[in-house]
Image (cartoon, rainbow, N blue to C red; front, top):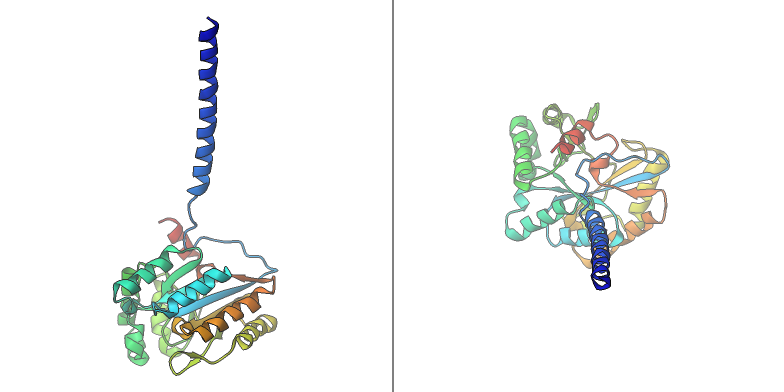
Amino acid sequence: MKLITSTLCLSVLMMAVSCKNESKKEEVKAVVEAPKPLPGSIIKFDSSKRYIYLTWDDSPQPPGTTVCKDIFHKEGVKATFFSVGMHAFDLRRKRSVDEIRNSYPEFLLANHSYSHGFKDKYKSFYNLPDSAVKDFLRAEQELKIPVKIIRLPGCNSWVLDGEMKGQPSTKKVYEKLDALGYSVIGWDVEWRFKGGNTPIQGAEQMAKEVTDKFEDQLTVAQNAVVILAHDRMFAKPQYADSLSRFISILKKDPRNVFETIDHYPLVKHAIKDTINKK
């Protein structure tokens, strides 16, 4: 009888331990499988912080795109890649776009048109607003862009929540995009280039330009600076080093926070609501 009782007690104890272990496994599994935030998810802004939006145009442009991604990842900062549909013409480049899209919330994939303004023929592109809009929609579909956020090729125009401004030649296009619920993002500071891909400013000068924009309050949105650069500019080691130094300088100020452009303070709330329902 004692043997039966002991065996029964041992079985109950083993079952309890097993249940406890399973419970712990479920807890760990729940933590591991916590859903990633969706592009466009709303964040709470801290008025004591200064938000920096690294927005890089014309991806995929290997090896520049890969170099930039690696630097951003190493430095622990978020960035947005405004991509061009026609640049993803082979498996390697399509894989690069997929990697950006799947890396959210670290990186955000956004829309920079399919043809890059009819291959830089901007006057023709903006003189045909219906064709231009179709060009953006084609890029969105083929690249599987998760947000309704666009940068117009070749011009600094903005369509935000309750505000539109930009070059007169682009007005018909950005008005149509606004009617379709899109935000259009321009820039506050440009990292300029010469000869197609050579950066003009050094790291220290660029960091000063960003800081001056904050200090002088010369930005489209308060406490927010949008930086424009192009992937191809940083393919060579010396320019990649300059990008790393630029980020390191800005990181020294604890007020600076790096975010993706879907968290720009004036991006349309309607876009975020639509995305969150998907």
